[in-house]
Length: 558
RNA sequence: GCACCCAUAGCUCAACAGGAUAGAGCAACACCCUUCUAAGGUGAAGGUUGGGGGUUCGAGUCCCUCUGGGUGCACCA
Image (cartoon, rainbow, N blue to C red):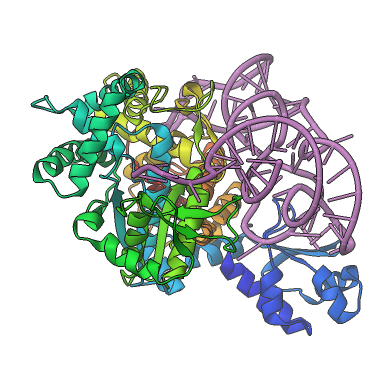
């Protein structure tokens, strides 16, 4: 639609004393049936010392143009409706739907962005709450890449800590450790800990040996952590989510980087030693929303706590040379992140831009890994794929596991990504596995319908006369296609993939209305047929690319 | 108790940097498959945008306040 806005801004600037840039800024797309482009005239009232209605009236009488079908002044709004042939031609000739052209138009080519996301504790299979992190992160990666950025996707492996030590302890006599058993082992050892304090002592001994570089203990940790990372990333790989680099937290201990950073922190008067020997950063005055903002960075023996290792890692990321430094983090880490950010600024380092997301809630409350009250991502994936396969079997007479995955996994991603990150997602099986209406399946299904038609088409539709596309359903579809680029840029600007889901549904809905009202093949007018084929081809591209940016695949036949 | 986020139709969500008559889907009701894929389409129904105040020509959107939910509040990661 930008092309139309530019066009209208030129027109209005030509017949008035208004500033062209200001006009362009105020133009908007009104609701359907009010026109194609609207200009609210209220902001010009002050500078012109005239009533908004007068301004709109005058513009309406002066703007006559062979491409304008209707121009109205209503309550201070100037509404312009273009002739549909002009609308179709202008928008479809200029629309940008592919990565190359959008990248070129927005000048972001070659910039680099570091994105860190997911970092699930390496103690069990991920549940759908944690998956939200990966889904948002991966979608942002795709959007940046689509806009021409070079992406560097990192995963911070939290391989230090009591949780891993507990698993090391629980599996000390096991010759083999199986990823799928870890969750139960973790739940069991948490249970045992309640009644056997001596286990806790043993666990901390293991942790201390690990931190002091004991080779056998490091190997034992590595066995657990790598089993977990392998298991977790296999699940994400199944969903098409990958990382470029896995950064191990323990490195900052074993390479004594924590000591160096600690020495830097010691130069600040805000670092003090508590009576028992712990080193603490006094963060009063940093505008952190807790009563007594203190960040404890070491234990009393001066060994590092997670915060210190996280600061080390954050410095590494800030120094990576990337143009932007992003991370996706749960809302439970909000205040903690502010504390790390304040510490980084103290050290002259720049904290990452952070995207926070809220938790996924179950109908009967919150998920808890320790209590085993979770919906595992794996289970969700299996259910979704199975349900999709049933539907495919019913429709096609035979199952198709690959297609079922495309459909089922798409539905998972869509159901989670369609909600804005700051809102809680309410998960229930019925809604998530409903493949009708506002779901990714709707878009995939209509995409397949288009492919089916294009497959059958035996005329060339590469160079067609767009001005033939004048039906209301065609105009509506064309305008929606033309919005693609601004939606992608909106997602980029706000670091929120949700509008893409909304867009792909609106777009598909416009196509479906067009499809049910107009024939594409088998009409006498072959030039019109060609134009319509070109239109649905562009529709398919927009659907495919929008879904792709959400991490969702398409198939040509469904 | 303090801080941050959220509250929109019975349910799940939209509303693009405050714009016009707040839109969809699901569920429920009435229709449409001799026609390019019915995982579809059409119609009707559903709202004092949690309550109250304020700013503005204009507020779901910004500010204050109350209520309800989420999250967090130094020696976990």
